[in-house]
Length: 92
Image 1 (spheres, rainbow, N blue to C red):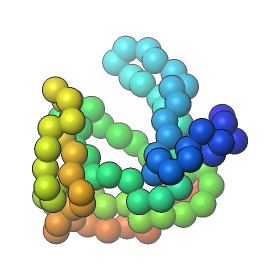
Image 2 (cartoon, rainbow, N blue to C red):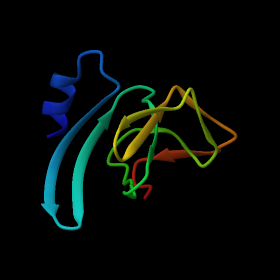
Image 3 (cartoon, one colour):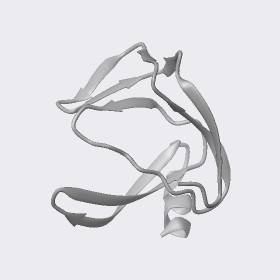
Image 4 (cartoon, rainbow, N blue to C red):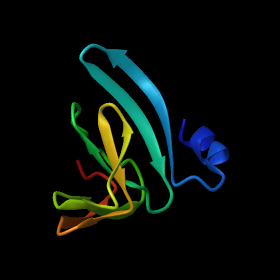
């Protein structure tokens, strides 16, 4: 699935593929190859497990240039005042 996501990505920062849907949980593979958009999920919680590579995860803070993406999610161009964590393969 990772190879498929890499091939599909083109210029998109993130490609998501569903692995499992069983209410109330959804499990997705998300391939992130560059800085992705900032988001707030108002009715969901995201848990990350890093399969390969490394990156920076920012949580908390306030969305910059906030806009509503859909009825349950807000998006923005970045996060101001958040907590930054370096993550790498094996981090959860």
